[in-house]
Length: 417
Image (cartoon, rainbow, N blue to C red; front, top):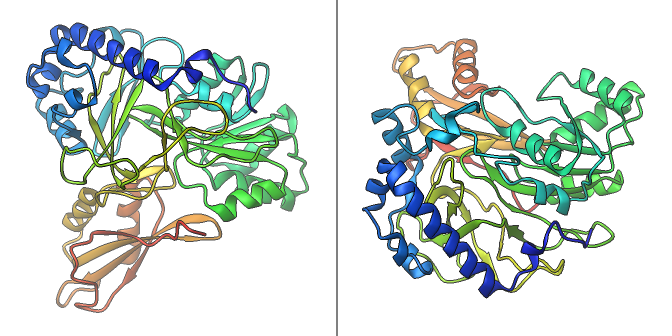
């Protein structure tokens, strides 16, 4: 797995930086006329002045709450979607809600090179178990795999036994999905006595690939790498491996993307190696997002990857700069917890605790009853599922027992094991 997708991956850093900023200037020259909302948000910059990162850092950071306000004021896309991207295309909804148009052309989320780095090749049969419903998760890797020449089975999420039956018949060599779902499939197949050993490689996303889980797959002789992607931006970065499948440290930033690390709560870049909020500029002509604050924490790694790719590397996902939290590949926002509280006035306070058990994400809503109230946990669980599209349990906590630390969502997952 030491070959490269194309020669862009091995450009000198200076050449990549120069060509990327040339593309950014061209994009903004096109977009500031077609997308006046984007031009206004950025403060009507002179595209020709965007010659380097110092000039880029003078522009404001667009964060999720800003985007949601823009979309609410000018539905559905806040004036940020190019009209050409809305013809004969797809639109998706993420929690918030946030509306995202699909980009233009083949492989619009730029996932093909991440799949290539994970060992996928033309002619492979790929079992794609990411969700195709409302959010673009399934389509992100589906489009990239097909652009690479793979045959894709759009399995989607859930219905594990039917997925195993499909694997037995199609004998896919590759799997794409969330990090823990492949383990669920493999263990269920063992229980049923079905052979799914055709799976030799996987590219996973939508959650953390914990060291214990990576080792589990290695013991099953499945080479698993991960990519970091969002619905808004597509594939931001991806892992690479050596010839034996051993993964290299960090994640390589995708081509045609500019990554900055800023001090949380500010727009100011931090020194290399310092942890901060990941801010991304994507050169997507259909939906250009300039200095988009992901809310995720990461850091730039020094040096280049041993695989020969010369792009910058990030440490990977290191938590959230805010309390918006990804659980089983879906973001859960404090606003959703607030909406649940409005629906259940018998709750005085609530705290959503995120943990892990048996290599799977778990969420538990701890609730303090209002004075004299007896909350119905089953009804609250139903509301929680309806709002987040995820299953969680509800536990009653004693009055005034929840920490008074301002946290609505507490992520207690251990990312070191």
